[in-house]
View 1 (cartoon, rainbow, N blue to C red):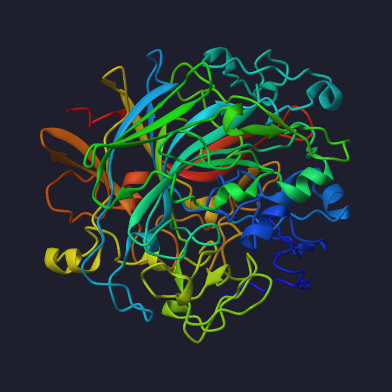
View 2 (spheres, one colour):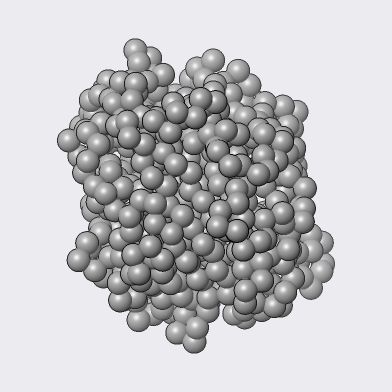
Length: 591
């Protein structure tokens, strides 16, 4: 079923101006349209998204733009916030109550290798890594006093903003009773760090997702939701028009640890790679990634154990990291430079993210559903596809979300190596390359699988001071992507709203795997050189030791009720944003 959405297109330079909409199931409201010029980031990279970037860097928000109480006021002022882009993010979360597990974590990662068969424009060739995923990342929660849930609290709620104490479980505010001293709507401000890795071979940043034709790159990425969850107030209009409601700090990992451009949200030039200084890696390399705190800020080091090279980045004021000041009454957006630090001392389930669809802290996640074939790109405001291919041949899905997903497209000529055109918008009908038998181990014939599909990304369980985390869980936000603000061409939209607001039949239409998909990747384990490694793909990867049920439906488990603070003060909204397994003893701790 094709969902019909009425809207008026206002093309202004390179901006995608639709502040598009999510509403409780059954409502017929159409997305609103803003009429403003491009932000600084759009001048650098073209059509942008919710988080003032090319969309790859965004965290997946728990709520959509127009669900926030302050949306109508902001829209009336002509804000420049484009639709929720969303990501489908299959994730592994890790838990431990040992000191240091919230702020000093080491992973080992083995980068995928591309298949010998090159991709073809008609979809008949192999599937490279950039077609499976826009990025994969390692996560950790950080302090940001300008972030949700209660910035500018004294003025807006009568409850002063609680400062975030770095590396401390005093920041755990998990009580849902508004009269509690640790009501979760009054907790310290948060920012979520994703240490992202980008595959080679396609169109380069900032409009694309690669750095070079053959080398991987990585970036330290911090997303901060800037709304007062208790009142719905958003930041001032100048901030919304320049950095968005989810401003992003971003810096490519470099050989020296010095950012090539200021990392804070007012400097979109940081999205352009500096290949002389950026740290680059080869497909197949084995990495040791250490994420930890220092007196000068949260730090990530990447040691390439294959080549003996090293890259790093420090989330410091010296590298231009900082936060837009949350001041809804201001007329100018001001950024305060500061060092970022981890939020928690341990990695317990209560030390969670209260803003995103996912709730995880220490985690590994993939970011899939961002590549559809396109033979010709229009020169319009959303980079729409004039010649959709693959499953959309002769039946294109031109947007914006949620009307279609053949948008934010780039031609074959833009690619650094593999000369195929494609679109990077969220796949709202789950028919892109990510949802085919294009993952390692998804084809039962091992010869065909290795000829056509890239090798799996592999990673160890996280460790602190040489000890692995004791607990873990699988989680996927499929249901968040199946709701009516993103999905289309599905028989029944996922009714994910349980309370405040409530859909007529919560849970109906929320399915795993998603509709129209042929395959959905999941996690398995393998033993290599005496160590246990996680890997992502299908059930047929040679040497697999544990398949966790052998399918996405069995691994990710049932729908999970997730609670968030919302307006007015003391109100709790509950949603089916994720499928989530039980928390179990970590089975992958050897090596």
